[in-house]
Image (cartoon, one colour):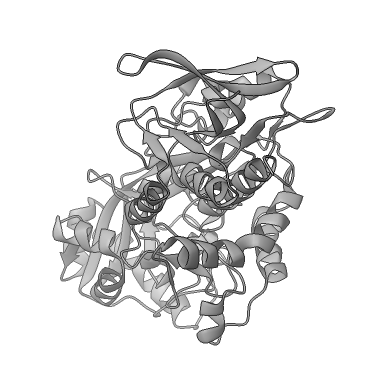
Length: 452
């Protein structure tokens, strides 16, 4: 006799999706969250979920397919430890998006005004606000509508394991107390290990020095529980970084500002690479050149992005995007030489006009050359989440050398990511949520089906 059919550990996007899928499959579910509220890294994201071949794309005249998404993802990431998982998640992406919208009332809209990093066609589906916290609110509301309990301040301390299978969890915390819950299945959805400096130094030392801007609960204990049972770790040094976190505000400087023609300059007032590598891939380039760093664009780009992205509009309203009438005023704000910055912007304008080749190899300049008045955001590079995690099978079960661990599932940042073998350059926009929600759907569906 068990207390509940499925226990979900973690109430971010992956965990809440797993709870919905398990309920749809007929299981009783409880979600346990150690933090004071649900959300995790999903709440800090833009809430963008890739879906290839959705009816929303078809209505917009966008020709897309799962095969095309898989090709795009692997072109961006290169081969890694989870190539088959990338193809599997791509294959289920359209169904995932439509299931969330149609069955559970999650408000996702196709973004058609840009493709974003790693995608050859528009396929990101996001809340109208383009804020992950609104995606979390919809998922949490849908879970609660199924009468599934979501218990916050309820940290899991250990897995229960008996006769070769996971049989539940032990909860232990100052507010929850200590007790055990038994189940047929446990879904680990507690994200990665980016908030654990010791694990970063052990598994991904190259990024241990990055400032971390993700959810504080990403401390990696659930990975260790599974590793102790023989699970295997994949892509441990891969990560999702962000090249331009607004300083000191702490919110991301929308990368759309760069895609529309903006540039990043260093403490010498010069560009230092091809910004079109993407916000994650460019983070190490930023860290490798002297600061302070600034994202420079113009008022046309500012107004366009602010009209489409609520978080960026809030950054502008807070004074985080400084308007400057001239290059001289811009240089003063950035603390750099006016002549150096003038040379940088003139060179960028020349290549953006198609009159020359960019020395860094950039070819996509969005709206074209920048024009005064200019806008600048002071920024710093940061780490948002690790992409290394447990190798899983097609049902999101962690695998050992001899097969999957019975009764255990891993989703989102707990599982091996699909963003490359190492570094941040392999990250395509939405990869984190594709893995979180996609694996959550697979895990919950399979865990629930075992009860039939």
